[in-house]
Length: 178
Image (cartoon, rainbow, N blue to C red; front, side, top):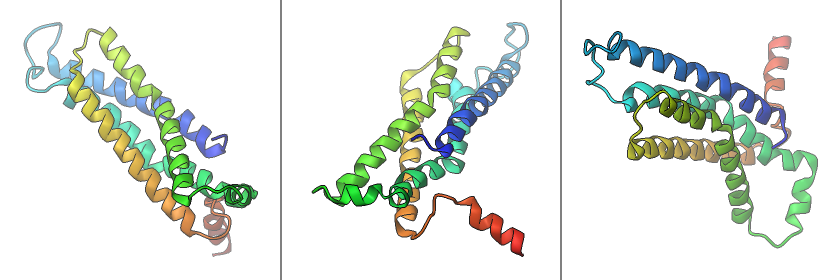
């Protein structure tokens, strides 16, 4: 997990989730009323709609656009570096090998999702209400989406032959020659 894609994912998650959370809090506060009055629609929607949906949507953007590159690097990087030849010398079923890599990628995604946890802590420190079942539902859906993204990226990386870890280089060479 020491690839450039992993570090880009980590660096991008904080500002992305932070900006979404700040915008959501500002919008939720504006819709809830001015100066503590009952004017507004604060009673009409819950923090699930006003806070958690926008905050975790930022995580979904990172899952869709950045996480596949990390997964491709983990899966295809072994073939490129020669580590796959060493792995194949051990009597381990291929499904077990891929499952282990998937678990590592999910653990990495949970680490990368730390800004969402910080958003939950900040919301609670602001005096916002947290209803655990809805937060668990959003977080588990977020984790399932990351798992599907990892599975699709791993399947794509395992079907490709050659160096798929440099995803941008074929595109840039095609643009330069065209």
